[in-house]
Length: 108
Image (cartoon, rainbow, N blue to C red; front, side):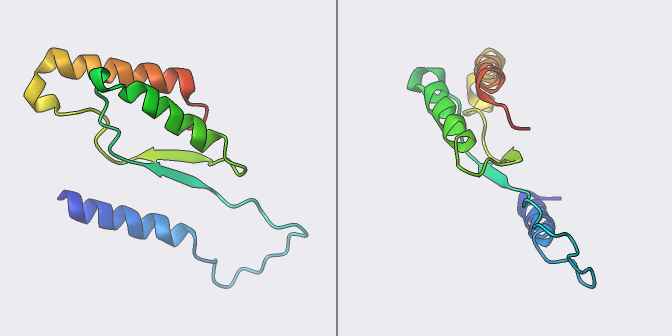
């Protein structure tokens, strides 16, 4: 499966979650809380450019919204050019990514 068809499939699947259920009446006296998803992409973690600080601010902003998301999805480049810098550079970027996520993220 190529990237485009995967993204289309995910988009259709996630989009269908927001459709009303046909034939099911809402009998609850109060409306249910909607399931909220935040989507981030292309963080491109690069230690020398301060990406960790920007990523931290992004997560802080998302988690401080008046209606907090139930789930945060990252669908894009988490680190920068792993194939060019070699294994040591990629591992450093992934460590930085993990440090920010461990420190800042309180949403699945």
